[in-house]
Length: 83
Image (cartoon, rainbow, N blue to C red):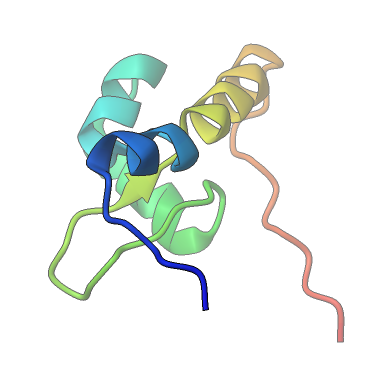
């Protein structure tokens, strides 16, 4: 079995940088409450590491939302669910 190390620098190079809902709201020029609402509704992809922890969003998702907002879409489309 290969030996694993817990090198924080190596881990930070592998893991994508994550930002909070507050930081995403600032980047998008929206109220934090709107970003959280969109997260709950699934318009923005993000996750909460735990029930009492804050939302985490990738910078790529913020850029996707920036493009949606720039395109003049009032609200992003709800992700489709295939049954």
